[in-house]
Length: 106
Image (cartoon, rainbow, N blue to C red):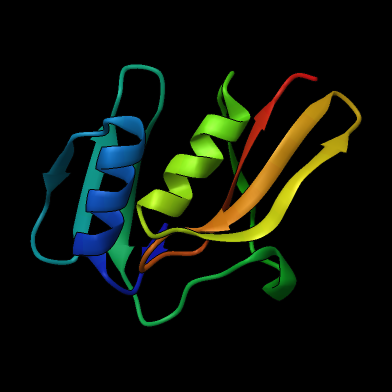
């Protein structure tokens, strides 16, 4: 996933989800929390749903609590909590990075 500020993105997701990162040079860092693996790379552009980018959606049982933590950690709420078939979710932009979402059952 692209990040305009790799350090800020790593700190945000580390604090939000407890992810630990492994750096592979100055422009790429990966994580693996035992359930999901991925990585962030340094880029000048990031994407959101309005630009046609893929939306990566995380699951959490405490939707309101995670949204409050996203705000506290400097994330920008792009779309407040809303209902959709199968649950509820909100969208946010992480510091230095693109748009993500968190969902939970109703």
